[in-house]
Image (cartoon, rainbow, N blue to C red):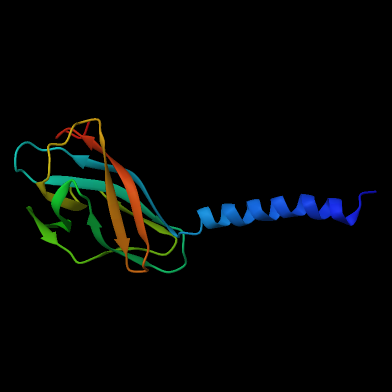
Length: 148
């Protein structure tokens, strides 16, 4: 039989590991598959990604920023009949226990005023800001104009 001291020394590291694992996964929002379309010259670039909300309340994406561009704006492509237009939006809601995709032809980020030329194959840190106070920095791949 083990002494009480032995059980205590074993239990503490396990408890600490559990707290650490919980802290690392405590954010309800996750960003994945982030990429930026590299465009020539002063042509604005598009930003695309997937958001997942594991929480039980909707969360709004309120802004995106990066040092690679002077301006970052949330947009949505809206189609009426045969006409499509891009509209600037203040926020995009990620439903509770749901997902929201930013993809060509739908929600996207317009990046303007590139601060230096982007290199296809590199990554750019992008900060995502949510209405619950959470900010997430994600490395976004730089892809060619064709998305490859």
